[in-house]
Each structure stands twice: as C-alpha cells, then as structure tokens.
Image 1: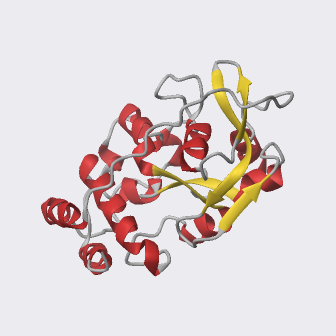
Image 2: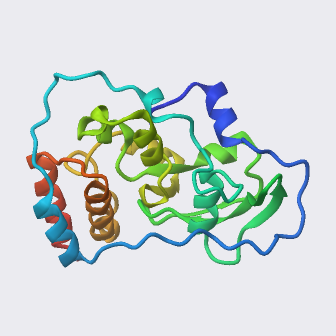
Length: 226
C-alpha cells in the first residue's frame, strides 16, 4: 500500500489485460473469509502478544513480500481479480477469459467498506479507473513487518501478502489515506469500525503478529461498537 512508481503500478493493475470482452463465464467468486464475532475477536485480541514499537530492527522492505498479485491459490487468476470478483456487488461485474483465468474483471460496482461510497467502473483496463479501486491489505504490509513479519521467511511473507483473508477491494484515495497506519492512527467510517476491528484482529491472530498498547486500546474501542 505504499505508493509505487507509476510504471510499476500500471503493470500491477493492468496485468493480464484482455484483447476484448465477452459474456461473463460462469465464474464462482472466492469464498468470503470468515469474520469472527465481536466476542471471538475480543478473545483473540486478549491472546495476542503485546509488544512496544521500537525504531530498532531491519528497515521495512516491500520487496521482501514478493510480487503482487500472485496466483497463490492456483485457480488461474491473480489475487486482484479474485478479490474484485469476491467483493463486487452481486451480478454487476463483467469478466472475460484471460489465459487460465475465467474471471479477468473488466467492469462492475463495489461498495467501499471504509467510506460506504458506491464505486462503479466501466473499463478497469483504463489505468485511471483501475487506480480508483485498489486491493487493500487490511493489516498493511509495513505494519505486519513491524509486528513480526520482519523475522519471517520470504515465502511466508509472500503468502501473507496474497492471503485473501487479508485483502479487501477499496476506494483508491481512501486506501492511500489509510497508508500503513494501525487502528490507533486511522479508522474507517463508524459503521464499519466493528467489522474492521474484527478483521484486523483475525489477521493478526491467524499470522501470529503482535499489537502495541495503543493499537489494542483502539481495537477494544471499535469492538465495543459491535
């Protein structure tokens, strides 16, 4: 989620461009990851390691998380297309066959979870439109790095970066504003704060990442909205 160079961004966003459209194949979206209940999230949060943030340690290295977006589940489609299909408003997307991928997403409608805004695009092969809907790491890569991922193997970091349970389709400018902040520094609209905290805690628990005290307090406050 750190800003990438324009050329790299174009490559990532437009990877797998198709030569034309066709009637959508019968593609099944990837399963929506289970989100724990507020009570379950509270229990998971209580079990997370609490560790202070320190300026020491290796500097954050985005390249250590590998190339985005890989086809880590082997369905023929990269994770961007998987998430765009999964998070779209039902029956709104247009897709095409691209190589082995049966859901190269070309157009559709999404509701940004962070702002509640409806996002509709008619040509996601257009760079301007593609930049306007991005795939957000709920727990940012830099935050994961600070919370324990700096000690992981490259292979584990690559799996984290492409884990569908970590990813959400989001409004591009909002994703940029979120940056690599944790919940103590950035929160979505109040109506999504409960689910945001549940998702954040689930990711940190699944990947055995630590929290600091201010982060934990913010998560407890948001879970109280549930």
